[in-house]
Length: 209
Ligand SMILES: [Zn+2]
Image (spheres, helix red, strand yellow):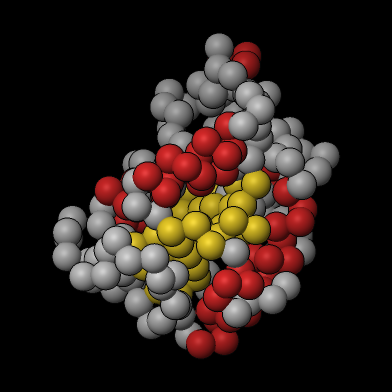
């Protein structure tokens, strides 16, 4: 873990501009979190064009793109029949586990599989995965985050990224929450900001969808 990744501008209000050490992190943009999925977020399908605009921007400049996916065995502990809170979702190899069909992921994009251990829930893309190592391989210092769900895997992933010393920009129009309790997603945004993440809209960075 390097604590020197963040440069000396922490605390300023400027939104970091993407550069060679930036990585676009696409969190769990899978069918089961979209319309007709097992655990749909609010307006999830609206995120896909936002993600594609950012993918075009990053891939067109040769900057890194990484996708995570929720990738459960059929007997995962988070499923209701195992005593967990959720209906079965993102079961490895199922239609629901696939990335949204309209998502334009560049060929060769690294895909990190999460929560693959049946006995362990893992809401963070960093939990039990190689994501930190892969970001280090890419010499990333800043991650731009898009995905599902704001109040679960996006939040946990962003909090870990902040803790690990990455600069983090959460794209507000590129995330959606489950809002199991009304206001969960808004509270998650506040928690990410409190941890040091910058919350911005795509248009603030010149990305128009
Ligand atoms: Zn899951």
